[in-house]
Length: 70
View 1 (cartoon, rainbow, N blue to C red):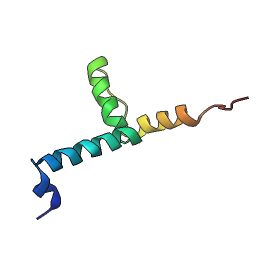
View 2 (cartoon, rainbow, N blue to C red):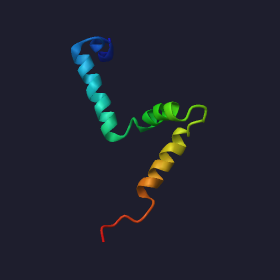
View 3 (tube, rainbow, N blue to C red):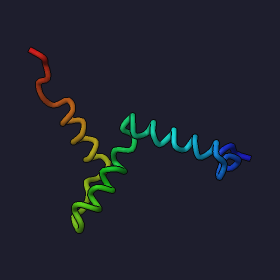
View 4 (cartoon, helix red, strand yellow):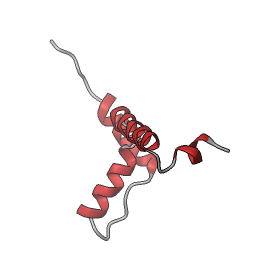
């Protein structure tokens, strides 16, 4: 029997799921899912960017440009 099915519905399982959701949010792993939720609310009828295009734009915004202190 798998550990996931054993913990499902228990307080420990719920706590572990909450920790994993927090880690995904902290690391940015859930960024595309959050983007899709926002896009569905704010831009009805428009097609969302693909996962590849979303992450390419995110990386370009993060690393494309001069970022120095002086």
